[in-house]
Amino acid sequence: MIEAGMDVARIGLAHGTIDEGLERFHRIRSVAADLGRRVGILVDLPGPKVRAASFGDSGVDVPTGHTVELRTGTDESSAAVIEVDYEGLLTDVQVGDRLTVGDGGAILEVSDKSPDKLLASVVHGGRLRGRPGIHVPSDRLQMATPTDEDFIALDAFVDAGVDMIAVSFVRSAHDIRRVGTEPHPRGPLLIAKVETRAAVDNLPGIIEAAGAIMVARGDLGNECSLEDLPHLQKQIIRDCIAGGRPVITATQMLESMITSPAPTRAEASDVANAVFDGSSAVMLSGETAIGADPVNVVRTMSRIARRADEEMDYEAWAERLAELRMTDEDSGSASVTDAMTMATWRATQELGIESVLCISGSGFTVRSIARFRPEAQILGFSVNEATVQQLTLSWGTTPMLIAARDSNEDMVKEAVRHAKAEGHVRSGESVAVLAGSDSRSRSTNVLRIERVP
Image (cartoon, rainbow, N blue to C red; front, side):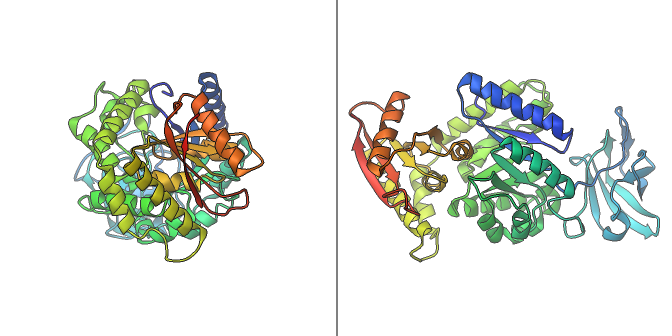
């Protein structure tokens, strides 16, 4: 999968144990090292999950029009009685609420309520297997994010040196702040999963608090009307890129390839449109977790995304981005970096520069130039190993570790030398170098055009 184009590996903890997740973590690190490739690792915390008791491996048919009972329990579920592993079921869920079981495997509407059970009509039936999740409207759930189980997993993976953490079921910036890790790059890059209506309503604060955003279209589609979902996706991506945050588009991108060797035409268009919307990354889930041919899926996704990149009108994109007034009109470091990265984009366009070398401690400068989607390649240099690993998520970026030097002048020379040694730039080529004036700079305030010796 790495050879086929995977830049970041996501380890989902909703299924399996922490030890199994750690084993996968170390295996990915080992294979990436053997291949000499930078591969980021993202751990996806389960969050407050509501699950049904088991329907068994063979599954149970729950037909449309059927009436089922919902009770609190963990023993087993049947076509007549679904036990739900959630103590707040009978207090949080109200008559008229719609509950989605599995990924749309069945949709139930609560029709009656008593002290020990709920009655629900099956609006859309299906075959349910194992312990499917049950989506309860987010404004009903009283469960906190992150959960106690999330914190246990978080400690284990932070100790292991994970690059990124995805926080599930985020409803406000407070949920991100509750994670309590060191700010990146000292700690992992925190990715807020936007999968609730509350998260959409509180998006500006969440973007400010998080290091990146994931548009988790599965649960978000359960919370919002189907016709609104594509427009919400575009809005979320636009706001994230304007705010200098990487954004991932996820869920059912190439779903048919779990079993099929090729995607549907609609799926191929969906991936391409996610690129045109401005996504920093597109994510696979079941296609690679349980799919028949995960390598083929990654290769197919990579091919579609690269072709979409070739067709995107990046000049118009950058012009629109500039009009959004991405930062407040103040003299802060963000505004300085914003102005410098915009100037860099214009310089690459007007001078025909093919490479931008960004030297950054935290990765902020690299992410700032990446949102302009320059036609030039972006080489993201840092002396910080954690920053380099976290930059694997940034659009169009080749992350590179650089040795520390005493002066800015020496750092620039080292970056140019390293880029040339790795074959990214050629002798005689002009490159743009973006950095701080010295090691004390809190912003990117120097743009230089250098000729490669």
